[in-house]
Every structure is written in C-alpha cells, then in structure tokens.
Length: 481
Image (tube, rainbow, N blue to C red; front, side, top):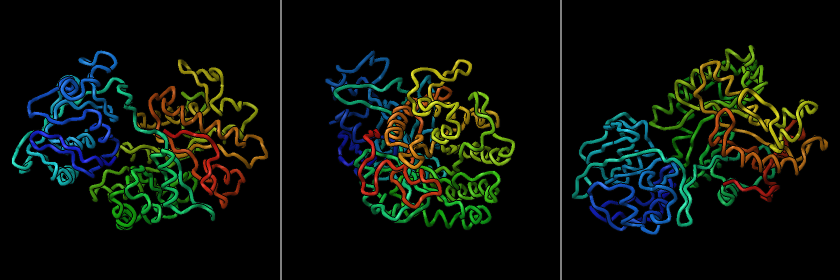
C-alpha cells in the first residue's frame, strides 16, 4: 500500500519515506493510529508508545494490553522497537528471508540492521534479494543507529477508537476478456477499485491491462496461455524473454503469482511441458531478483476419489503429472492454484447432491467425516484436494482457489438463475474468510468472473458467470471487503 501522508517521525530525523509502498501493510493507517510526534532513540515498548502518543487509544483497548500488546498490524506482527522506519518496512515485508543478524528469544525475533537510512531503503532491499547481508556503510543524515525490531504474533485483531485491524482481503475476481463488448481496461481497473476488489487474475499478460494496473495497488495473478507452455519449457531463453517482456516493465504493478497454464489435463499433449515451464519461469524470475511465485492451475477432474473428503486422492491417470508439479511447488515454496466449482459437481449429480449443499444454505451437517462435519460442497471438494495432496508429499502446500463461480443463466433454469448465483457468490465471499474444516483460516479465492463474456462457450452457461454486465452494472448486491 502506498504511504501518501508524508508523515515524519520527529526525533533523530526519522522519516517514513513518502511514496514508498509495501504490500500487505497499512502504513498510512499505522501512522494515523499512533500519531507519533516525537520519539527518542531509547528502547520503548508498545505500551510506552501508546501511553506517550495516544492515551485515548490506550484507554480504549480491549483486554490486558500490557501482556497482550497493542498496535496490531494487518500482517499479524507487532512492532516493538524501531529506529529506522524505512528499513522496518522492508524487514516486515521480507520477514523470514532476510539475510541479516537475527536471533530468537522466547516468542519474538530480534533483527539488527546497522546504519540504515530511509534514503537507502530501496537499495538495501535490492541487496537483500541478492543474498548480500545488511549492515555496512549507510548513514542516516548525521545520525548513525541500529535498528532493533522485536516482533511477536498478534493473538487477535483489536478494535479501538473506531478502527479495526483485520487480515488482508481474501477475495479477488477473474478478469476474462472473451467478449466483444467489454469496457476498456482503464474503466475495469476503476470498477475494481471502487468496489473494493483488491485482487485480480488475468489469463494472459495483456499489455493494456498491465498498463492500466500501474499504481492501482491491485494484486495480480498473471496467466501464461497454454499454447506458450512448450516454448517456455524447452527454452530457458524463451522463459527469460517472457519475464523481460511481461513482468520486468511493470515494477509498479503488484504481481503476486504467475500461472503457467490453465486446467491442463494429464492426457493433453501439453501436460509434459507444465513442470519444465514452471521451472524455467521460476529461474528467470529468480535471476531478475523478483519475489514472484510460479505455479499452474488445476481443476478437480484430477481427483480420482473425493468422498469422503479424508479419502481424497488423485486418479491413477493423473498421478505422474500432479506428482511432478507438486514436487516442484514444494521445492520453490509456491502455492498450488485450483479451480473449484460446486455448480459443476451439483449439475452432474443433482439426484444425490442437494442444491442447498452447493449454495452454502444447508441448515446442518450433510457429510460427517470422522470428527469433521461438512455443511457445504465447496469445503468437501477443497478438503478432498488437501487430502489428495497429503498423500503425495504436498501436505504443507498452500492452495489458492483461482476460480469459483455460479452462472446466472444458460441451463434452462435447472440451477443457473440470478437468485442461485447471487446466493452462491454472497455466501462464498463470507465463507472463505474462515477456510475449510480441514484447513481453517482465510482462503485466498478468486470469483469467476468480472463480466459476462458473450464469446465464451461451447456451453451457454459459460457466457453468464459475470458479476457485472458489460455496461458495468452489478448483477448482485455484493460486498467484497
């Protein structure tokens, strides 16, 4: 998020650099919260900060705030002692991968960075990404100092003075363009921002879209079209050119992931190229000092068994294909991207699957699986995938749901209605904040899709998944934040 306030931490010349953005951290909200006018270079705690700078905030905190410290960050960390805010921004963004002096004590971590300056924060970040240790020859005006950051997990978000810190937004929306009547990309980006949609997935590195995304603060998954996989897999130079053309020119676009291929089936001739394409793109990204993960998108047809969820496993025909992909993702610490459609499961077996189970409206548990109860089909499908991943060494893989949606028309009223689609999207948005029975916690999920696309097919329903009409009118009353 860009910090646009230009606020100063007065005292030893400390400054939050205006115009410096750090993903996933609300620096403007943080500065507004603590309202620092002056600090010293002596050690101070969260309690000291609040008592000295915002006593009204301190008084209104919930719970025991001495032992359960305040100043909750959306990242889930608490800052305790800091001398150089620009370096702190970098450390919080890169925490876990910093090549600096780091020691653990109790529940916290201490990270030391010598002689840091807001003016050289960007260069420090670049040096870190190359594996060069922080700590030499950097001055902050006439003052030298050492950054000491004590971090500990926040046990829960706090609410005070009308302000609540919450986890980062889980919901994104796919932006498909298989239509001849859609608004220009600049209007689309405005539609995302005005509706509070903070994440986007695009299916190819469309240059007009990437240009329009500059400075928008929208996080983006950039897709690689399936037909490009062979070239990327067989030529590292081609992969490097792809990155140089489609990623490097957009430093002010928040590209979070690259999706190398969409729903490639194990029987597809392109299947042999997915793993090598991921590896070559990842190598090109690493060589460019970028922090972007590369993965691929699968669908649930790869599952051979999904009932009950704990018995989830991949089919024999998908085994070698998915095993190779999971091995790569585990080694690169990248997530698996998955498309999950309860609509498809329901319409393929409406006799045994109830509509309420697919729409998140079942009044009680429908499937009991050991000690886990399932009230909706989405959770059952996704937990089947988690179980299948556990069986092939992917127990710790993060899964991002890159597509989930419900059509509003196209199946002669069997299930594709505006009412059903609106119910599904509204309930899905609410539900993914809490995750699944097997994997509780916020689940990054992308709704499909932003617009109705009149040139999709062959099924008629493919044209009616949009949350908005091409004229930008909303089909449903949804809140995305």
